[in-house]
Image 1 (cartoon, rainbow, N blue to C red):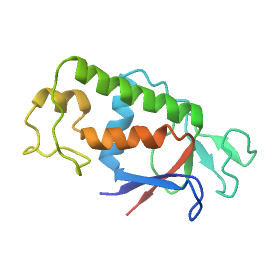
Image 2: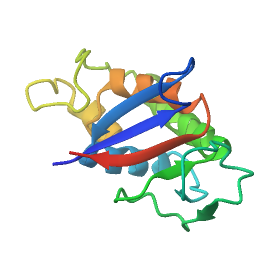
Image 3: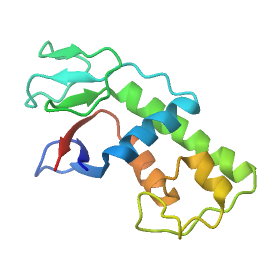
Image 4: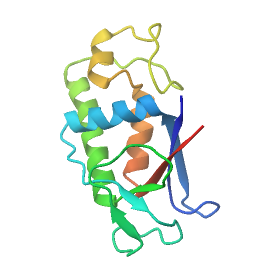
Length: 151
């Protein structure tokens, strides 16, 4: 299994943030966001990471909705990241409005069979923990970010 590293800002500088998850969770997050209204704009293949302005740099090219994790750095522009965060927020609100209790797996990114006391939550969240979805929402609301696989 591989890890998807996501980051925004520059390493070692104020405001740098990083979040990671397994490749299977990345796929589940993308599916969950789409289910709740996210319309992907397309990841951007980064030719270099010196200029972090994804919206304006001529050193980037569009990857037509390709959020697959591979050997290249890819970027997601601010508008797309924030739209993804809003869709994840909608998923959590939907779960709350149904009166479904969130499992209390504070550190887990994905729910194990033992953690799932409420099967309905697991179905609606794709099995992704509430805490990770909240953490990811905060990260995405910071705007544009890069992602790449790691082992």
